[in-house]
Image (cartoon, rainbow over all chains, first blue to last red; front, side, top):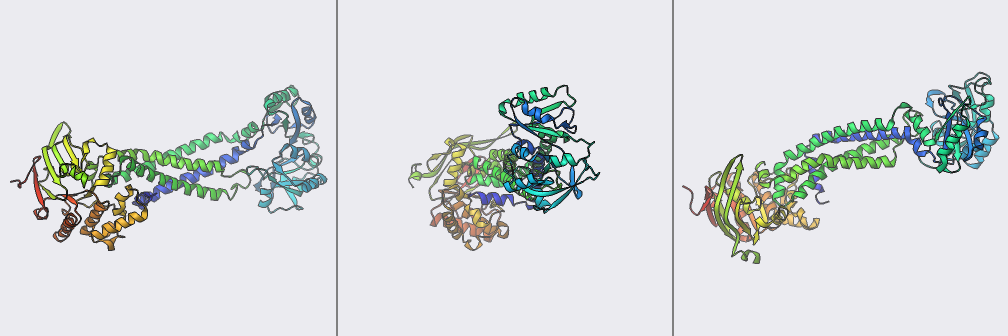
Length: 386
Length: 235
């Protein structure tokens, strides 16, 4: 710590140059924060996926529906604990930008399948008693200032009521939370019986979007998936069964390989920062050759000189990293900027720590060559350059 | 000072020293078979024309460079036998340097410049500050402690340089043209200071200079020419 003042003063020597370099590091880490949040939003569902859950969809595409009658047959397959279904409703609230997920479900089965969703018992009872009842996650309830007892009109982009209207009205009977911070609390769930009876008879009645199966033994999940697909082989609606994680991954991959895209952008950004900061440090050491010679003359060892230069570059990148990550965290913590397209938009603590580690590594990489150069300086030669 | 006495009474002993610089395929013999002894407490002036090897000899005595041949022994320590790491630690403990161009860190105040050698010791912050105040008081610059080098005159900057040189209470003070960049008045003040350090604080001082006026302040003057020392000026 006693060398900190010296390191700090050296960093302040060329204020404009240091500020511009610092700014470029800050911008890079803001970008890092946002890309990590987007990755989390698009692929984060994978981490929340359960090992004991399988998703069964139509073999051709997720938008093809499956018969409701499959549920009973699935429940009879060895290894299956139970199955339940959901259907994509594709609704908006008042305006197109107010998009979030709404799915019709069978309440008790759905909550049993998803223990990560926490609904108070009295609200569950109200849901079971109210045919038009719906529950919504805390995030969406707060976003639209909804409270229990409200009537919520949702316009579906897919389903019409028997009367021909695209607007479905629900009674809000519950607001749920998640057991984990990462649990998505944006969707709205309403009763399947209301949905099925109310939708137009010739438009998919008796059909559901996909099934979720809970297996008795997670180690047998692959075998159970094979049995399910075998059960519906050569039927009018063949199935594709996969682990929940793979299903979510495939969903996210519709817009490309998120991890690869993020990694490619970040690699480019950090490589550029490596050059910018490396150049700053190289110049700083070159300009200071004589002073480094003086430090060596008064007794600083080669290792101490090397450490001083490395500490300076690490201070620069870590300071920039912390500022950038802090700003990114502040903005990201305000929530999904897309009004519902990225419900899991958040900056995970793990990525924050990875960002900090990258800033330190960046400092070491950019400082190592100037530091070695400073270490190898011969005192007498350096003093001649004052 | 038992360590001084162990070196046959001489604090600095230079024996048959040779220094050759290599420039491309050319060898430049700067010092050849040079001998010098400096007793503890002496104020020695080292004179000679430009390029005669004065600064090279000073660098060898201060452990900033290594001789091509021969021995340099200071306070009983054979400098050629020390590794780079130990030589740096030895310099921190035993040698104070005063440079012609002061060589202060422009980003540090006078007191922080003086503190630099103390950062290598185990002294606490308060102890370091006390030593800094004492050194600045010795050179008469206590009132300029918080000033940056750019706000000090040349003479004041050199006094800060001297304070930095003496703050660790070194065995030996090596001065390379300490008045070379100063006017007569400021130069005299610096020479007064060096003389006082030698007489009142018993510092052994070796000073490289071109200036006969400066060398007159020393207790002995030696002359260097073509790599050889003599007690008479070069003609």
